[in-house]
Image (cartoon, rainbow, N blue to C red; front, side, top):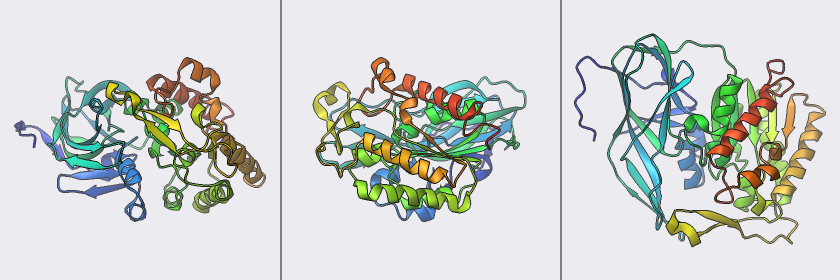
Length: 395
């Protein structure tokens, strides 16, 4: 445990939902609280450890408050991921925004370590210590503060300390964007939590983000649709496709009805909310070759994890990205006849062939930091700009 003495004049503020944004639940733990991006009832229906881990990694989750504090510390217990045979991954980054501007970045060394053997799928967890994320030398003016949690590590929040009182931030009346997608939406290899493509797009659109991007787990699960149905939102988007291909989870016959059911559930309580269906961005290995994806361990020792497609392209019942885009376009057009607030975006408009030539996917599946910026900026321009599905005139 962190044993540094706490100055007597510092204030400890309970971490509650009053100062937490982007999470749908807050679980009390032995050490503090654990933000979740799915509610407890939905977590009981999760069928695998991948989604259980992903939803507890706080992509888009941030502490938001007003204070005159010049120094603040956040004690956290992160759970980091390591791969057998590969160099250690870098520590997750925490971003500090002051009055909407990036003011500081920090990491939390230490913590638990979950080691994954990609050749067998087995995992081992090594317990670790609480670490402290510290930001100092801030203005003493009253300011709005946001501490964005790392998107790549399950993170228990232990203690928030400041050298001035903290109060919940005032409601700015901004719209709420509820988004669901895969690891690309989760953050993949973005530079930091405020530079994942959804976080960048939300900043440019001046909306509050609830990011239900789950690495490896955008699989049209009904409990995710019900969680979205029950979450207040001004605008909603669902990015569907890549995980259904790279897990080889579903055949063509099941795909269309599953998409309809997912959208129907959201519409149960969001009947007129702008709803955007986004097809996959370009991913050459799976454009015309179905899954499953398999790790290519050739360059693992050099720190490079890459993937390859292993499915049979001659089997027309299996899903590829090309087939999914055709189906999603057809389904969106069919539904839009009666649902004037439903929209469709071909993901290749966010990242297509020319982008791949300039900014290839380093592991054949996930975009790098520069590509996250490009996707976020394009999405914001198209969807939040004039005439976009999420523009002020549309919501």
